[in-house]
Length: 314
Image (cartoon, rainbow, N blue to C red; front, side, top):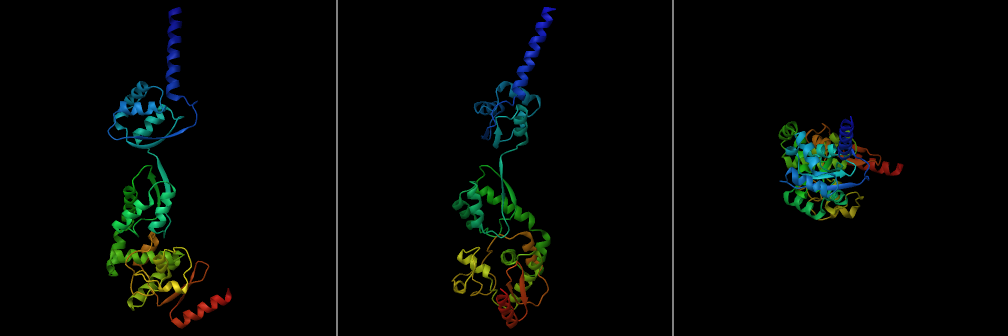
């Protein structure tokens, strides 16, 4: 009887000890960012976790990982663990490759410089390095505006590649076919789309603004887009004044006919679609009314009169 009681007590103690190692969550709520390098064995990974106090027993960790068939499925990368994570949670994170990623939203119409600023502010990229990659590969216009989950520690090349890949997925066969129908190259589509993105404030007007630009291009008129002047001056959000219209730059569409040499920002999908699907319109002029909309005119005299009336109302 005494022997049985001792055995039960020992068994209970063993379960308590194992339970402590497996489920203990009494430790402090501390986050630890840890990188598991490529080529590490299960034993080496266990040592890394143990050295950072994420597991309390290496042998038990490996036993439970082997028992669930997870050891050979561990994935490398940077993880954000917590001292409160149970042994099972850590095994599951490594098995499923739940690496640490930072959420970043890139708005429509941002230039590559503005995107680089966002990434630099979040300590995800070196601004100069990223811009050098974009400029070398001529990717202004192709960094697709989207919400990204960027792996912690990803290189600038990897980040740029992520954005370009999303662009490629969105630049559908339908868009390509529409571009061919309009006799436009891919560069011309994205360049026009980037101007539309900066000029249009509502989805309803994107197609009309696109139609105005098509009409001007057909008649070999200057596009006269203030957005291109802002890009030339790097005054992305500032008001353009008359002296700015004389800036010497191939991007100044008040001085140079046709489209500028390349995109002036990174347009969203709606503007790309508008660039290959212009509205059928006879409008040739437009100006912003200040409420997010535009006033469109067919004739120059009408355009000037409407501008004067708009200023009088203010």
